[in-house]
Length: 135
Image (cartoon, rainbow, N blue to C red):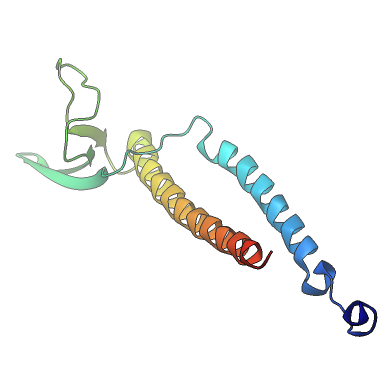
């Protein structure tokens, strides 16, 4: 009782915890909103897929093309019955190539975001454990 009346007891506000929790809640809501618009009807490349630029030599010259590749057959075929490992994306400035490469970038950014969210989740769990250990 003496410590509570004369020992200058601290409260959660002294540590800024209510403001931090409110900020985290706000950031989570913003992230959820942005994730919805980030992937809204946009292509996201599967894990392990990469875009490659290659050339074809013809008597009339060298022509550059792009393709999206996977190590295993996962893409829907255009003419064959079985799935295929490669989708041709055409020339550098073709919309298929541009969107395919953006899809790879979207996949990579989502993977990085996932890593950061997992780090935050683990940090929050450690904070809960610290408080529970002393309760």
